[in-house]
Amino acid sequence: MFHWLEKHPFLFSVGVFLTIAFAGLVEIVPNFAQAARPTIGTKPYTLLQLAGRDVYIKNSCNSCHSQLIRPFKAETDRYGHYSLSGEYAYDRPFLWGSERTGPDLHRIGNYRTTQWHENHMMDPAKIVQGSIMPAYPWLFKNKADINTAYAEQLTDAEFFAVPYNKPVPLKDGKTTIIPMAKSIATAHAMALKEAQAVVKDMHNQNVKDAVAKGDIPEIVALIAYLNSLK
Amino acid sequence: MNKLYLWGIIITAAMLGATYKTITYLGKSGLNGDIINKLAVAGAALLVIITVFVVVKYVRQMQTDTATGELADESWDNIGEYKNPVPFGWAVIFLGTIVWGLWYWTIGYPVNAFSQIGQYNEEVKADNAEFSKKYANIKGEQLVNMGESVYLVDCVACHGLNADGNNEKDAADLNQRISVKSVKYAIEHGLTGKLLGTEATMPDRSGLMNANNNYAPITNKEIDEVANYVAGGFKDKNSAGAKVFAGTCVMCHGANGQGIAGMAPQINGWNSKLIVNVLDYGKVGAIGKMPIMDTLNPKQKEAIAAYVMSLSKGE
Image 1 (cartoon, rainbow over the protein chains, first blue to last red):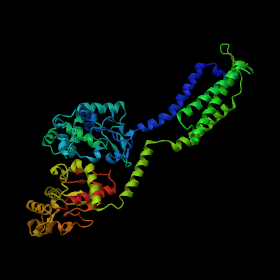
Image 2: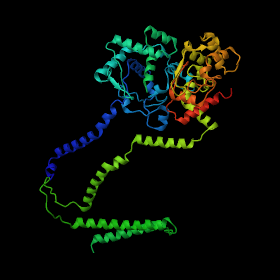
Image 3: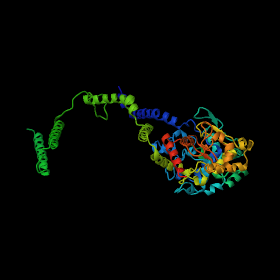
């Protein structure tokens, strides 16, 4: 019946390849596409959070801290629910990290507060006895780079279809809208408004003064980012 | 007799002889009367005989066989192919593979597949079951010890090793029920929270009248006095602070600050339910925000409460 196929080895090879490739596509792609969708409740980063993410990367926080909770009881007891791939849908790049010199930070926003971060970044060993984390005092002086963050936000929205200014579904069935500014000037005003909300819970007078003046120190952006990790 | 058969017999005899020699050489008493040794030797002899028999059979076949049967149409570079029927054993295995494939596809894999999350769920279930079984009736000092170990993992980052919250810079000092700073904050700003399990609100200073002062709103001096009285542990019943407390706070917090159910929390000391509510719902106060500790299970929360209460017992 298939003797004709044996006489055309090239055609036969192509046919075998196509059959196996099709089976692979059917098995792998739907699952992969499903897992890559944003999970319900995952929101795009706001402008200030993106700027904070840049501070996080700039200071190489991901060298010592992972952002990936594995499905083991010991980890979920300590950090909360294990990480889902859809939770990284808006991370460019993702910051899974490969080392845990410090603890995992994927849900740090659930169990640390603005004021804790503020004290901790200034002098970690004073807050957590025996901590080997270095201090980051320059975060309180350097200004966050809002321009770059806005450029990132724009790229995300234009090329990666990140839903800014569009309803994002939440866990409780409602939706929320993460706004994105139309111009760089309004972007700065928007970031400042976010910064003011964070600074309300902070104690450092220099930081408060800077924000009152219209500047945004890096620490404010970083805290906004860390608080968003839930 | 064929030369091939002769060689077969010679080789068989030689190998069996070598086997016998090896056995007698290794063990002084031969097979030791052990059934396993006997079976092993019988197996070895059988293997030798079968191997020689099979080799002889096929060498013989190669020497004498001639091909027969109908040739297929194809000629692969002048090499022909016989239309031999599919060997029976091969056909059975082939069909068996198809049947097994269908079973594996529909039942075998879906029912028995490994899943990381599935394994995690089983692990959590087993651990939780063991935990609740082992600590079902934990109490007293054991509960306090459990609370301390949970504290050292989950609470120490903010409240510190001395439980004083780094001098109340990062978190509340747990060695006392309430500090002067916290009492003042509560009176000046009011509080909203779920210390009682349900949403309850304490008014700020504009809503706190002193009955002993013609229902005038509480003054700065009175706030200082009552804060020292409450934070000091309700000691001097004749102090000015005690009078302010009696005039202003008693209605909700009770005569000795023991709290009134559904109205206001206890403020003259800790109770387990109060602490569990703080862990369950978090708290916002003078020092800042306390996060919700939802990775802890109810028993661990109870243990933390016991530990925190044990901290201020000595005073």
